[in-house]
Image (tube, rainbow, N blue to C red; front, top):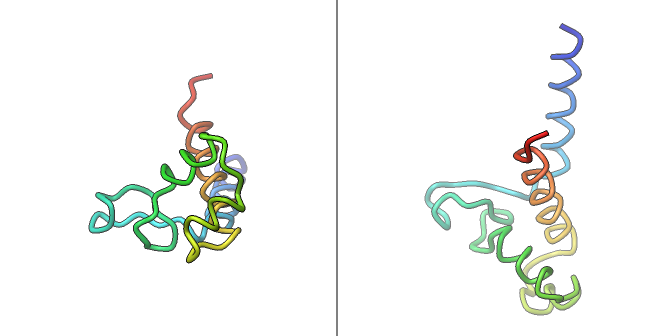
Length: 86
């Protein structure tokens, strides 16, 4: 009982930290996006992975905010972590 309560609280905290990441089947095929825009988490992660800085990503996508990029990276990290077998 206590462990399920703790897990629920952790999930709520995780979601609060990722409030800018949305998924809608009508937008980009349901891929995780930033604030309902047509900018996917994968696009942002790809830019960072290619060696671009956060500032460069923000210059490329001027309608994004720094927190959008940070949450996209957190989302990608949490998804990778939650699907990695122990």
